[in-house]
Image (tube, rainbow, N blue to C red; front, top):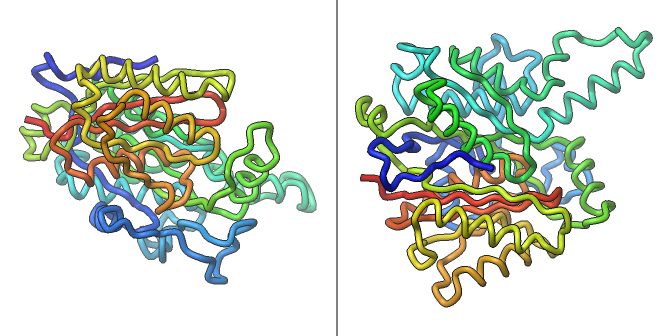
Length: 371
C-alpha cells in the first residue's frame, strides 16, 4: 500500500530539498558522497575498543562520541541510536537554514524509522531489573532509551520540531516506508515539511541477535558484517523549497510495497512492486539510469537480482551495490540506499528496491533531475 507520489501532472511535486548522513564513512553528506563515489569499503576490523560479537568486521561510524558531537548537557543517558539521529537532524537543519525549525516549528514534522530502537538499551535495562537487588533498582534515566520512539521524540525535542512525530519499523524496507509515510503527511496537509529517514546503531547485543537470527532461522541469510548509520531527508513541496532558496535534489515519483508469504516467491513480489512503481511514475524501464537494490545476498538477493534482470532485459542499467561497502545497516539500509541514489546525480530516473526476509518488498522511483 502507498500514497501516490506521481509528479507528472502535479504542478507542485514533493521534493527532497536537503539530506544528511551519519555513515561508516563519517558524519555528513560530503563524507558519504566521497566514499560511495570512490567505491571505498568502510567495513573495518575490530580495533579492540569495541566488541563486535560474532563478527570480525563492522561498518561503525568512526570516532563518534556522543558528548563530543552534541555536548555534555542532556546526553548523559542518551543511547547511541538517539545520538546519531539527533546529530544527523542537526546537520540537515543547519544545511536547510535557520528559518526551517525556528519560524514555524509546528509546521515541521519528523518520520524516523528504526529496527527495535536501541537493542543495547533494552537488553541492559532488562538485565539490570533481573540482576539488581530488587527489580525496581534500575536507573530511571535509562528507561526512555528502551522505547521505540525515543530517537524520533528526542530529535524533535532537541531541535524544537513540533509537527507530527512518527516512528516507523519495517525491517530492511523501513527507509522507503518512512519516505512514503512522510509524503502522506504532506499530501494530507498535516504539516508543511518533514524530516524523514531511518537510524540503526551497532552494538554487541544487536550483533548477536542478528547473527542468531540469520544463521539459526528457517530462512537463513548470509551472516555478513553489520553496519550502522542514520540518513535523513527534508521532504517538502517544490514551491516551498524554492521560496526558501533550497535546491530540489530529487522528487519521489512512484512507490509500491508488496508482501509475500513464501520466500520462493520473493522475486515475483519484487517484479510486481517495481512494475507498479514504474507505472505510477510514468517511467519506462529503458528510461531508468541507475538501480540501487538492497544487495542482501543469498537466495533472497539472487531472487531480487533475477527479478530486476527480467524487467530491464537488455537495457541493464548499472547497479549501485552499497551493502558490501557499509555492511548491513538493518532498518537504516533503505534510507542509505536513497542517499546513495542522490550521490549519483543522475539525469534520468533512479530505482531503489528493497526486500526483507520477513516477507515484504518495496520499490521507489526517484526523479533526480527536477525542473
